[in-house]
View 1: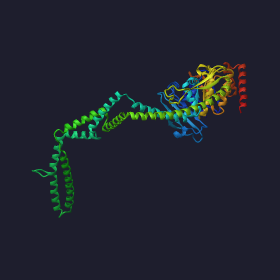
View 2: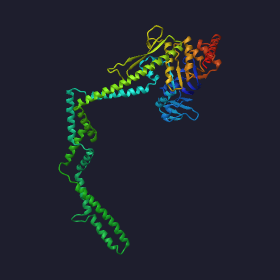
View 3: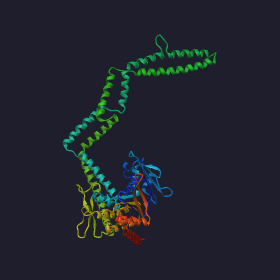
View 4: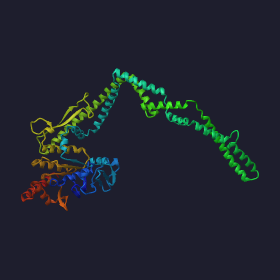
Length: 563
């Protein structure tokens, strides 16, 4: 549950701490006092969208910190290796910068906003007034039903089968072409294959030819350098080379070494130099023999490089890419040449895959219909408890609009129907529900569907819109019952709901030193009575205070019946 919320420099809240309790927490206050800012802060801490406009004027940044306790073993903990500390506390922090950047930490470790959003979806749910609009969106009804029925495994199994059908159909479509198109494509492929095969491509050839071209372009200079080196090492008609001179030096020192050990050592050193010179001469000779250029060789190399360049522009970035393209062309040509046989084979495979997908869709549909009966029964019970006993709720099934009766979600189109009055036909919710009815239907749905969530905290932001009188009391009782199984935070304007809270917070706005400040305070019982009187009539008159006390006593008495 959310135990502590710390807010710094968010809109009109300079600094504030709210210590939420277990059970049913209510927040009340004048319109514009800052109740929505508290909800925005909670939304930020679970990875919701934020804006730099949230930063209080003059502040360097905005900061929200939350402490969660009594958490179950959430999947997020195992996935990212961050768990509550030894006291069972999870510290979540988010800092909003003026440049729009966010810094997020969980127990001191930095995380991405997307990771924080994943964690937030497992920590708490926020249900606001806009959820009523989501309820009207029939596109969401199928997902809600599947979540309620725990049908994700069946749905995923079906989707894998349906994806196989789509993949095979794409392959079938690729081989289905008219004869004229087939002939044109075969001509193109045969031309490309012939051009690439005649080129006799070899991986690495361009690099080798580029090196050869550099040598050929400087052939005269290279030949002259090698000849000069050869003459310097081996000598010519009129002079000795380095090898001969070193040999004479070695002989002289070897002779003198008979009389001096120092000369003997020098003779060995010179001998090493002669060996090295001999080796160098051999290498120069090999290099010289390799310079066997023939007339027109440079033109041949340039022509081959030009051919490779033209092929690269058409078929690939290098020899390997062009060879890969050649393989693909051969494969495509084979497929076209044998397209009749392949088409027949693919048609059989599509039919078989479609049969499998349809069987899985049928199983999924049957499971959905069973879940729909249970959902309708549960919603009907919730609506009765919310003083709507005559409202009928049902789930309508219709086939999907496609040639084979299937789409990515199965074979069903689903929408929620209701009848507001006895004897009236069931109709789509958006054509029947008034604002107050929609709020209660939404609460009933959320209460039932939330049972499939692992979250321990639910936040209701003014979901009592359009509700009053006896219905307000029923909504208050239902919220209290929901809070017996998990923590509930509720922003409300209704005294009936505020009176039912286990913990009551007042959000008040004031001015100090020319600035607006919002203060959040937990109310004791006398202050609760004053706040309920304000909610009822805008002032704390004796009559309103007496009515507020009666509300509190009735709420307390009703709670005793729920123990």
